[in-house]
Image (cartoon, rainbow, N blue to C red; front, side, top):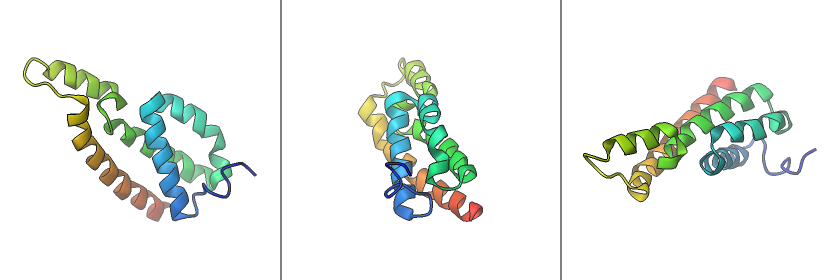
Length: 116
């Protein structure tokens, strides 16, 4: 049993929401690769390990769209566009926040239904 066991399981909607939120925030704070390395070994304690790896891959990848700093590609685009348009952190966040939430909601739902 782990500390997260009562709150974070793949069998409950609240657990899926919490996992998705933690992966999104964590991926933006420390980047998605370290987040995967830190989380991966614990997936089996949350439910199906196969489901966990698919969900982890999806959520940490999509999380990169949340902020301009969430992905190296976002930073490159902002830098390259600078001579034509200045894309600031909060301006990007206006679009990144909404699109990331919608894609995560749809994607986690599809993954959950397909893996059931």
